[in-house]
Length: 320
Image 1 (spheres, helix red, strand yellow):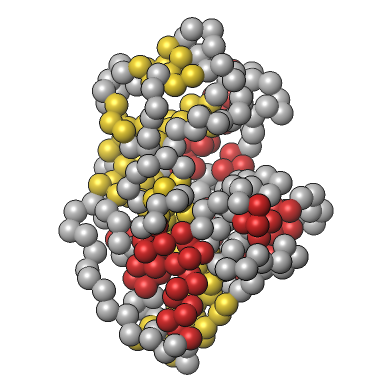
Image 2: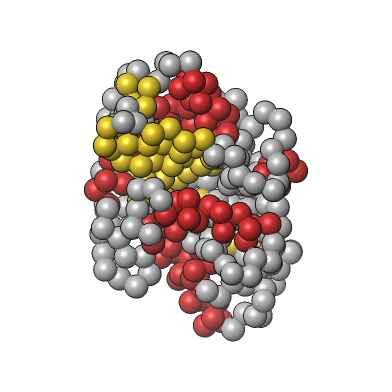
């Protein structure tokens, strides 16, 4: 794919002549996560050749959601697009300008499939939102529909609890009086594509297609897109979803306080933890141990002081 313009978003839309849901599929929200882009390009080719025919509802594809970051081969342009995603009347950076185009686009749709990848080795997984609720943090009314989508993207590991874990981290930072400016003290900073979609009355999932450079990642994305199109398209015939799912809940986020904070070993996401197992050591010698048996998720050896360092996960009581 040639380098996209950083002055616009390229959007592909197909509208069926029968009524149906409105699906949007996004790739490269982070510029170095290209599995989704490649999967989208492959599906676009199948549609153009008539191998897939959109007959109901509509589907919109955004192969490269952050062109600046994509062209640089980096996670971010000026900042993380998948944090504090919201329109603004006074855009200050590249990601603010993208948000002003992306947020109205998301709000036009009912369903989002957001395609990502991750740094360390590991198997693909899907992230879903909360149970139906009327709370203040993330009120929601489409948990059943979201669960069905999570079941039909071709992976067997399902993770939830992003916003509660992030909000709890914000509360802890405030309580500890950490230096303002070094941490983000607003729970809305945790709002990314799927969280914004839910805030607009829609629903969706984030699919992590595997490690960034895993050659299997684009196939994971391609399979997920085709599965998501099952209600819209003819010419899509795929195997049923996995028979068993592993459902996990993010329980806690731990921040890095000092550049000298260090992991006890090289961790990868979803490595099991025994209760009391040493995870990391602070610069002052304080040991961070697993409070209970579970898993480590999203360990970031490059995390800056005052930012998310790793998450702890537990088995979820919510099935599919």
